[in-house]
Length: 150
Image (cartoon, rainbow, N blue to C red; front, side):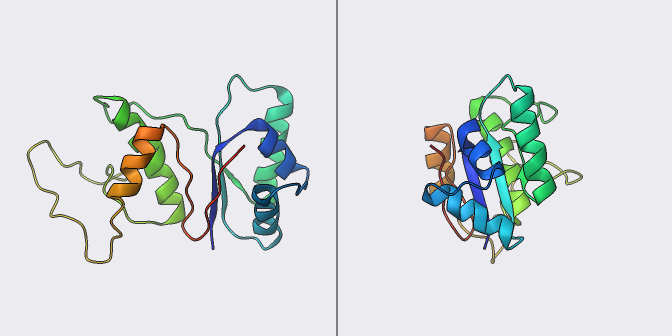
């Protein structure tokens, strides 16, 4: 079981960092930390205060992964969807979910007009999910459990 809170407000992040469990998202995150299961938080706010950073540090020390939704530009994105793909691909990589959104570091990129050979037989079809993510501008994702932030 794995859990992603994306987007994660600073209020939710602070509640999880302090061990509060006033709603289902906070309780599920608390259980993930308690059972040392993968928990990924994608904070949405900026700029960050010292309190925000301290809460993120507390969660990181407790075993959570903090993945700010900061896309990279070294892959030369052509549009906003490419920027969303970058962040979604990093989340999927951490969840170890196969995808074809973009090459992983060190993989050869597929050039425009070339075929990447299609999906591998065991790869899940994420096209519907990815379309919803791109339209919403955020994702509510988890591999085995679903969570959203308030």
